Amino acid sequence: MRNLPAQIARSANAASSLSDGAAEIAPILSDRTVVRLDEESAASKQAKWQTVAIEAAKQCGQNWLPRVHVPQTMAQFFQQPRRFDLQLIGSLQSDAVHLKKILAEYSAEHGDRPTSVLMLVGPEGDFTPAELSLARSHGCRPITLGPIVLRVETASIYCLSVLSYELLV
Image 1 (cartoon, rainbow, N blue to C red):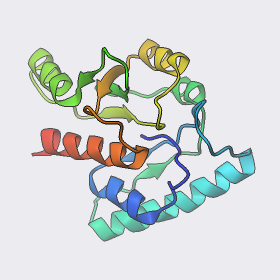
Image 2 (image 1 turned 30 degrees about the horizontal axis):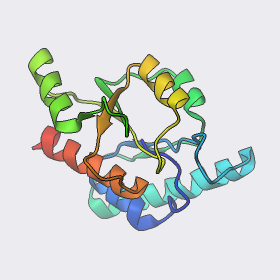
Image 3 (image 1 turned 180 degrees about the horizontal axis):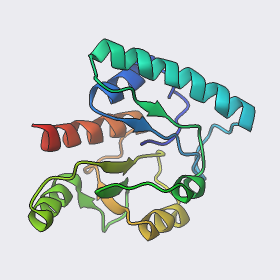
């Protein structure tokens, strides 16, 4: 799952995310999101992105069709019942832990790797403290993506690549 950058409609970005294993993409309209959409525009964007996602899935030879959700706020996202083995949020906070360490801790604690992971990424500049608090209250653990700040597109692909390597190999 990722935040809504201005460039999300780039088919190469969608194809990269899907080829790395994203089953769903839920664009989050965070407080720091530059793009603002009304309900009609959001539905139109979602339909366009869903078409791109389906084409990317076909191109990658995936055996499932990914789902692209309508852009929504983080509060709206968490109002919908979802179940994940592990819930993570990219964060610039000092207490954020590296993704590989959290995956190792999960495996040690549960005796197996997680089969479903929620990964919240973006925006550049991080989520607001209120958004991070909301995500934590819903079980998300903050992770660091390394010593440099990544663009949201790069951060998404980085996370999916690490998850793919650690969980699918």
